[in-house]
Amino acid sequence: MRRVRFHGGSGSRILRGATGGCGPATPARIGRPGSSTPAPPDSKVEAGSAEGRRGRRPIKPPMQDQFHGGIGGDAMPARTYVALNRKGGVGKTSTCFHWGGELARRGQRVLLIDLDPQRNLTDKLLMDPETGEVPEVPYEETVAALFDPEVYVEDRASLVRPTRHANVSVLPGAHRMEHLNMGNPATDDRQLVLRDFVDEVRDRFDSIICDCPPNIMIGSWAAMAAGDGVIVPLQAEDFGAMGLKLLNESLVQVRREANPGLALLGYLLMMYDDKSPLHRAYAQTIRDSYPGRVLETAVPVSRDLKMAVTTGLPITLFKPRSKAAKVMQALCDELLARDGSAELKEVA
Ligand SMILES: Nc1ncnc2c1ncn2[C@@H]1O[C@H](COP(=O)(O)OP(=O)(O)O)[C@@H](O)[C@H]1O
Ligand SMILES: [Mg+2]
Image 1 (cartoon, helix red, strand yellow):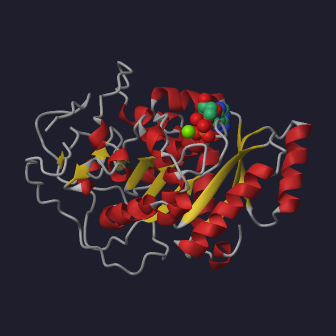
Image 2 (image 1 turned 90 degrees about the horizontal axis):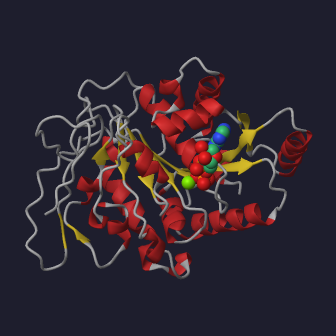
């Protein structure tokens, strides 16, 4: 078994089914079929009073035990969200990072799942802020382990790692996810692997956020099959309607074939400049074309947001009083308000 060094961790405390806070990473219990894999630890899963997957939950006070998800038996199973767009560079990863950070700041236990082979989210979450170093994560201990039939994971929950942020955990991404993204996802046997995984760990978290690659291959498809709500970050310069049309078709197909409860939480205007006539025209067009689907909150181009990502801190921790932090808080409020709305399960 390979152990993974976690920079910034202290001491030799071994986490069991780690779900939040800073500290050493949990070594995943992993092997290949037939290998002599060590027995998994007793991974403790809190028994939440499961009031159903789809209810709204009040914001919790910060956790007392930041090394383990769960402060009591009142937890509801996590809501699962998916940041999706077939285009790269539109702000999917940034949205996941800042939104997840803000939910955690409010006391939620957050799991971020990195499905993008670029692994930007993983790197930012696991980066040592002083050295900029990112610890090595063996392939078998990444999200790819769920998708790769060559990898056998005995205790899948142990793939989840703590980060240096209290209440934030990550299921790390893998560059080699690229190779697993082949074929038609709609007929792929693996389309429910993420849903099964989420079902296993959802009692330990309040929110699970999936960062998708810029395509709708198996990773994004599986995220939609596992999700409660999809958020689509958009840049206000992409007037080609084809991308959104294809995305909407995929969403409808996943809803029809795998996940009838999947809602479209909304389109998020990202890097929006309200002084730009082009951006304003785009915003008007998309609001007219898709009434009710575009989020009120638009995220401006912001140096602070970029700096926050560079330093590995969500904006509401990096510069809590900045305009960008206020926008992220407003986004978080709006998404929480929209989540669970029945009519969003109809639209695509
Ligand atoms: N609101 C913003 N203001 C300034 N830069 C941003 C903003 N949102 C994203 N960026 C930057 O744009 C680039 C692409 O964003 P990213 O979140 O990685 O997009 P994606 O995940 O869709 O590829 C990154 O360098 C990111 O820091
Ligand atoms: Mg990304």
